[in-house]
Image (cartoon, rainbow, N blue to C red; front, top):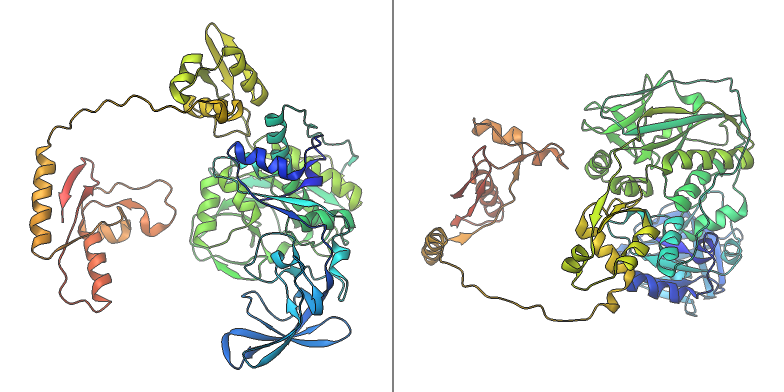
Length: 580
């Protein structure tokens, strides 16, 4: 994730250089991979438009692109996978100097002269991506110097966020972490007051059971959809997000700032009520990426009485997107089931900034705050009349979590004694604590989903306290000879005999399709409640299915003499080992 340093400093007051903050985060287990300085001025790089794409006559992996810079049309050889007609790109003219001081000239590439170069994010010095050329939004002026799109110099921290720390997937979340590690105060997230009105329009939201934990929304009328202010465009570009329009940009701004995904629908394109429901197998929808998707069944969708409006938590549909003609919007902020968003994202191969966060779990306390923050910004930037009635379905209420911690527990887990007052000091900066005799009762905040067992809490204490303060020592090791297991001896003998006869041992995946298994296996199957994909929704009741799959794999590759065997567990109401 990218963290523009100046944006970070809007939440905390520190004097450290970005490199020092990067070192601090890395030393505390939050790997900061790069620090990019985007203050570097580029020379001779402008916004161009690809007006035609042709195949390279001498290389199948290269394309010939006709690129217009507003004055001239030049031919550029490019091998990027995302090159296509009509996109706005960063065009480096002959003589241009790009990131790192590299000079670009005319170059003969496989018999074709390339007049300049199309640049990736890394070549622009705006980030680490080198997977394709950088694409600007459609409304970016043609021929403008790219330095104009980066008016102020800044440095960007590129942070690797692990799956257990979704609280760091926002600028505010990283600022909160830095404030904890440095012992400084953070400017708390407070939504400014704004005017609300009695709206003329209404809409009803129906939440299907087990479709969503909590769903909220609000109607905003008389919205003026225009290009975003320059400061917002610049901030979003620093995070790798192109500007669309002021409404969509505000939802992305709240996402980057505070980590709460939002979506805005064109209210006038919604027919009837809004339904949050499971998709029916065979339903189709064109999403905002322009692709048509056929539902497998079981995905959660946002729909009206006639059509799907969005794949919940993943991406909105083309049929209800906000455009310059939009006058009224319905603004959505929700807390979807992480496993259901993950299922939809995986089976349709769609990864978005929203799905990435929903899959890992958003902060429940940020759902309504995010809605209010975006409503406030839309009222001020887009002149929208915010309906004072907020729609809420489902519930965010959960039992308060707590973990009991003592000095001994911490010492047994991390191997060093930390004084009780030090433990209390660390935990009180993260969440709420109570003392009950020798025990410290720790109540983790809603955004720290990883702190739910004593081992995690003890590890967090050690991390904040400083692993560098923990002395290195080899623990005493007592070796007890393992008794020979008759079953293992038997398996070893069988394995040696079979391999001696020319057999190969295989290890197959223990998940199978219930549809296929049910045709051959009449006994009860052990099903998985939330399978990632339907072909793997049951545990294998026999090794036969895996062996047949291995057999098919080898036959399809021309093998004729196939000798295979497998030891493994089969999963029936009574678990047992088997040999296949």
